[in-house]
Length: 150
Image 1 (spheres, rainbow, N blue to C red):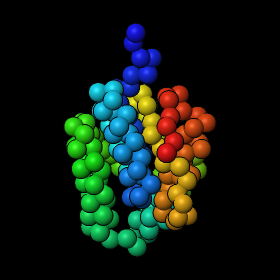
Image 2: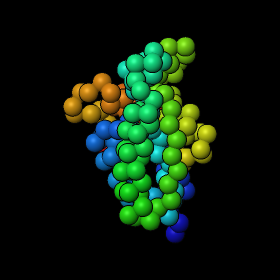
Image 3: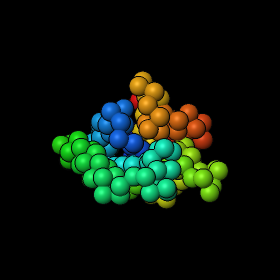
Image 4: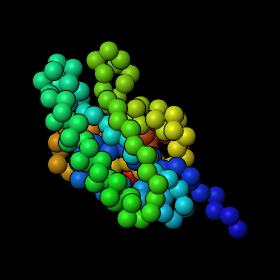
């Protein structure tokens, strides 16, 4: 009997938080079980996006921080022998009011042809830089793919 759930690409949005690293661990377990690949989407939060727009954030520092976090993601995924791809996007836009973390996650899922999503729930810290908690409810409501919220 074949499994009706057999994803080939698991999308996991991350934002630099511990909660999103936990989501990577769950995504890795799902991908390993189904011999699937993982795509990690780094979503830049509203405060950081505005700081980038005004030049208040040093691009080199941002790049180094993001790269270090994505290396941690790669380490988790590599340990399980699961193929990984990554991308980065802004979760908010002052020019497009319809752009928010949830829509960005779902748009990326369509673009990369993800057939399973793992999203972190609202962070326990309440840190406004942890944007993916804001996306979880939206993704759960509107995703056409199966979603695991962790």
